Length: 295
View (cartoon, rainbow, N blue to C red):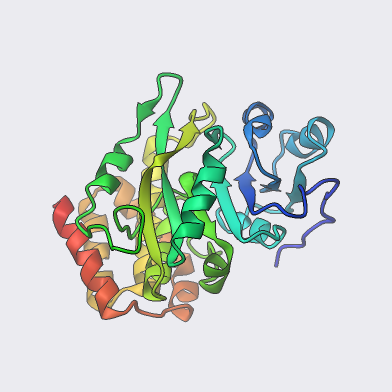
């Protein structure tokens, strides 16, 4: 079990704040020092055992940030630990190389307030200095699940964590990001559980995240292996046995990244199976609709 050192809480924002920005980071000191001033809400920063002086640098430059230094890398689960330090009805996730556009956090909160079944709002992502629209946004905008009358945009069964605003009660009720899947690809299990609990997830194009990808990133092949690892573990936790078999088969057909992902998933399969709780039939049917639209 990870020991949580004493938390820095010099300033956690005004008591009437409605949203907290939660960031999990590891060895991205320069990126954080550039992006932290851009956030328009109190920030909880979870440091996943950085070795580059991130903690000391943030304490010196941004004493207003609530800092949670961990003694080991918890991956995406760090965001869940950070969420426990936030005491607001909404949580806005960001990465160390991303930030919400000016005024858009307030706009997103207003949209959430106006749609009480909405658990997760997925924002438009503009990439790099040239503000290129992330291709995943076009895919979400064309979601074959349509737009429910009580939601503000197309329904989703997935999202990009660094561009998501969530309702705290819903996020916590499904356990947040878990310690099994970790990162990358951690979003699918959360999305499936929110939908299974009856909550809505929507893409909202009127709200924007800026993402300037850090130069300190995993090699593409290693990241793809990580995504396959997450797919297999998520299938083990939430999908019927036949779907798990098919996911494993697709990983093998994907070649080296898929096979490496399977090997990396193997040690965590017992933990995934202990958390197994297959999704309701309606959610599985929606998942099949999404997969069919991509084939």
